[in-house]
Length: 93
Image 1 (tube, rainbow, N blue to C red):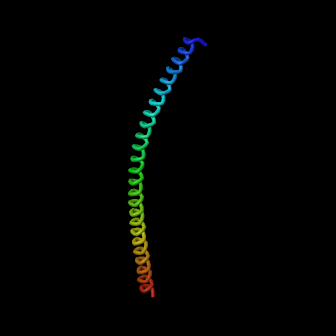
Image 2 (cartoon, helix red, strand yellow):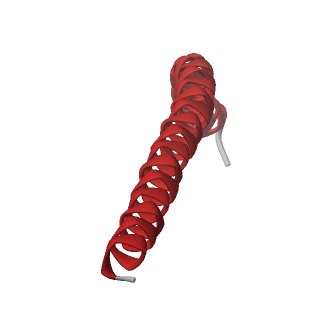
């Protein structure tokens, strides 16, 4: 092989190495950008998780209040009916 062919091959390989180096640097930058976006999304997810947990607690509290109110009304109506029936029974006798 003559010297010019070897130089041409070395130059060609040198150009390809530069291309690969540029591509690796570009991929590294894209990866870092994706990592940053992922960290932002992770933060937003954690905020949503906290808000969901608070909402769940509030919902539980509201359900418990509704159950308590419903039970009070039910007991009150039952007491009224029993009292009414006793009064009717006393009147009828």
